[in-house]
Image (cartoon, helix red, strand yellow):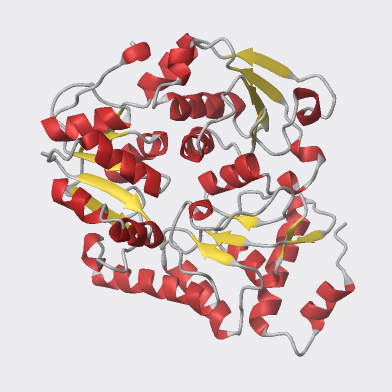
Amino acid sequence: MLELTQEEKAILNSEFATTGDKTALSIVVKAAEMLGAKRLVKITSSHIDGCLYHGDSGVLFCENLAKNGAKAKVPTTTNVGALNFIKTNQAKLSSEKLQMAQRLMDAHINMGCTPSWTCAPYQIGARPKKGEQVAWGESNAVAFANTVLGARTNRYGDFLDIACAVSGRAPYYGLHCDKNRNAEILLDVTDLPGNVKGEDTFFPVLGSVIGRLAGDRVCAVSGINKIASEDQLKALCAAAASTGAVGLVHIIGITPEATNLPHVFGNERPREILSIDMDMMKGAFHKLSQTKQAGKIDCVALGSPHFSISECKKLLEVSEEKDFKVPVYVCTNRHTAQELKAQNIYSKLERLGVVFIIDTCVVVTPILPGSGGIMMTNSAKFAHYSAGNTGYRPIFGSLADCIKSAQNGHATLNYGPWK
């Protein structure tokens, strides 16, 4: 049975608490009861996924919370919205839907959320430390927070995410609890060839394998280079969380609490041990493409999760500043865009044919022209969602493949070890 503290009971019953605060806490309490949590846990930050417009109910819900005095009690960032505040004409939405999307974003700002509009809050300073209890939405951000930062969060969906932010609490269950963070399955990549681990596509492909094998289970991975970059780990987490429902991957030597194998398994034997081989990896690589890997392409889409400054610099370097024959959509956030402008990178990429998508993403907002086509991408998450969300069939490849293809106007892939 759920037990509330005296403070929590006082908020629910107080005539001094705002109606918005009471509503938010009551939602968290009901969720905790449904989930079988025995108590609530105070959180130190929140990341809101419910700021993306999916229908009027979300708008009305958040506006009602804001009107009734709800304010975020912890630092709270916002995920992508349904429009680019800077270029609102990019989103192919009716004026009515654009207005509702704007109202939803405004409602979150009115509740004290930081208007970050990014699926990668960890790139703009939202970086909870090991052991911090947080309530984050957005699958890749949840996986990254648990896996790379060592914070503790479940995947919080619309309505519950903002309720947690306003109440400053979350149900104490799932990945908030020590026992539920123990790994159940061990995936060993030690025997994969070194040249494969050095491939630009290694981490998103491995993430896809992890997602398919682990599903929603906590898994441990051994044999990954301990100097993997955050962009590489970001790609792995995004792929694992979209191909599967992975919230935590214990990467031995990288995940803060994964100091050794016995520790992540609670000093018990793994329930399952699998050695990842090249057949699994090749199969996952080719599944990320949903059309023949040759012929004309209509665009390149990059930035799911949002492209970082270092990724944009690499894009400019790989392009050798040669023009593109098809649009290259780069999804990122306003903070990264500002830094790119300060470093004179933004304008250089635009001159080549890059179309920056700020505050949103081409897979969750109708931005791409027409109702379908062929999209080249280096993102396993884009590859997973693009056909269903946009009608564009993906071809997956490295960043270099994507840029060469954009310059040629047709798919140009160097398969390397994936043949």
